[in-house]
Length: 475
Image (tube, rainbow, N blue to C red; front, side, top):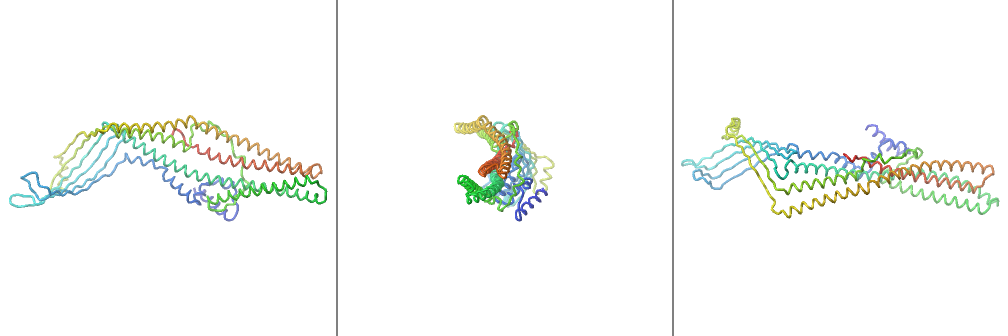
């Protein structure tokens, strides 16, 4: 980490005072430059990193929860017992405890409840008195679904749905970040390769200009024919036009790159490695998928999970519940705790609670909608796997390998054109060739050189596509 930060500072410093060689830039994290210079890319990266492990939030469904309640109830309604009259009855209730859900559907609670009951104006004999007492109840409660949500189907579906939503959200943020960085990388490689092409065309223009100067002198002395002179003039004008067009493209790429990194970088071209690309095999991508493909898989899984959750929501509910509480009653709270410890007044409850939706037609329609959505999601995934995935992989692998072959052949062609041009110049110096022939060979070399840069840029773009296949289909 320290080394990468040091190299990043070196690159940024060099950008202010001189050229940065492409070979040096390839060895550091270009994404780090983008994040340091581009506010939008930085924010997308921070969002992606924040969501990276967000699916662990689903564990909260099974985690212990601290629960509590406090309330005050003041009752001034008349007593239903003629022998027990009072002006008002005030209940101050507080409760605190722990609650946990289990994956098989059981919900447990461990609680302690303390209630202060204050009775004002209680009639006793011929007078009125006020009395206060405390009731303390430690309790253990259980609830177990027997129909809807039985065996944990509901809570498991909720857990799975939350994990899938968080995973999809993270992958979506990663795609957004990657699209922005890849666009900036295209500007970078376009600038690098276009600069190399401009340098090459400048050299070609200078060589043709020297030939044009020679032939112009001969033309002025009537030692050269009009046809050869016009051919040389056409060649230098064409070369100058190509150079101007390439310089215009370079300016555009550099402007776009500057928008991405907010600085003007002078990237040195000399160290670019045209031989760094290799062929790939389709077998290397058998179980590999992109983030977009992963989202398709997760979306299908999510829809199936939501179908299960919806089905459980609308099923008849039948819950078994039970509780056991110790009970202590006394005028002082500490004394009521002592009564609890004696375990003389336990309270046990066991029962069933049910709820049945009455509009079964609406329930069936809701279930049918979820089933239809699940089928649509399944159909999309099936179509992609059977119709698109193989075609996409085939095309990318084929393009990569064809371009590698083309670039390799192009590099050999460039070298052959250089050898041919050098030989023809030697023949011209010996008086055994013509300037016209040398001009043709110069143009042949320029065309071959241009193809080399175009092929390299296309290969850089394909590398980005290949790098996207980094997820396992089984994860």
